[in-house]
Amino acid sequence: LFVAVSTVVLWLAINATNCTDGVDGLAGTLSMLSLLYLGGFLYMVTGHKEVAAYLLIAHNPEGATWAILTFCWVGTLAGYLWYNAEPSRLLMGDAGSRPLGLLVGVAVMMSGNPFLILVVAPIVLANGGTGLFKVALLRLFRQMGISTCAQTGHVAARVLHRIRFPLHDHCRRNLGWSNAQVLMRFALLQALLTPLLLVLLIKLR
Image (cartoon, rainbow, N blue to C red; front, side, top):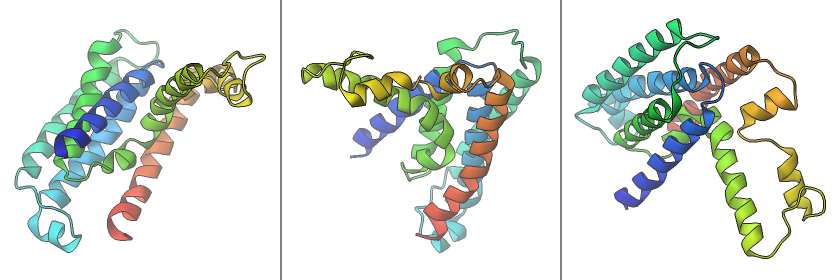
């Protein structure tokens, strides 16, 4: 069961992060926020026996070690983003975004709760994950013999075609947001959503 769940979490984290890499600094900033929250969770909750017991969370004796690893990556990303603000000097590409997604997924699994991926990376999943969902849905329509033409196809297919994915592309092309607006607004949403979702997932449950 662990292997099956880990496969889904890692695949989702890797591909959603990869799809988010389309605006200078976006994938790096959102991944840095995810790793920062994950590091704090691994160090102060999962890696702390008393706190983990109080919150009814499985204790991981190596939580602090994993936290140090994630915090090191936070520092690395901070340096990368400092010197790579728009206009970027270095292209992250698949070689950078996929390992970032992998690290987020591994840290989530080390926390002991696979649903934590929804908490620490909500905007990454909404941005990149919905694009993956759209592609899968359109392929399913084609296999079922339902027309996916943007003009004459099924109403659901027409709606999907009007919404561009990843969502950062929709915001730039359809809503007229600049790259700086996309970066700032997406980062703010993730920075504010994650603490709220953490409370809902851990304490209020």
